[in-house]
Length: 192
Image (cartoon, rainbow, N blue to C red; front, side):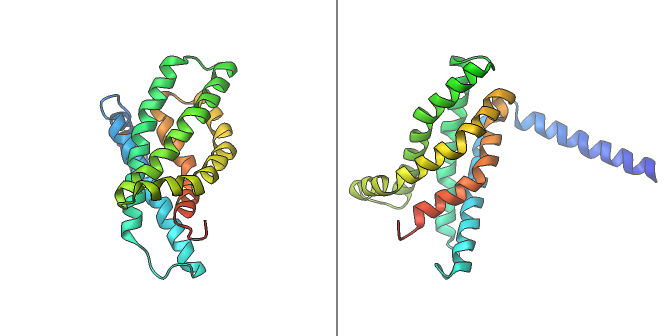
């Protein structure tokens, strides 16, 4: 019986390893990264909406809101996929100096770009006017950017120092799940 369990475990882990190799291969990496980003952005919104329902701020879950947040995750996932590839080719290496340069460049260029993409994607999906889009950026983007400076520099040191490029978006999204909850809160908080 112990032998059957061991063989079963070996079979499961073998299949998982094969799946990992396929998903994170150069051929499929963009699709994997986008799929992860969509899934976790949608999950972050679902968690935030359920919290808002428990607090009494909302009476029911909105599929459209979750769909829109997931689509914003898609646009950001695409940006991050190409950004990490670009950054790793322009700043090769894993010395602490290179890692810290990547963190600073990431915070100064990619963070504002992703925040802008987030609000732009949602403005398009919500059919907002240019004036509404600008107003939302003015009122809310700084809150997300401040949170970016708290969360991402330590997380990105780990990302850039320890992980190969192909796992960067996966790691980014695992850390980002909590940030996605906050992003949904900032975006949809009427009091903002």
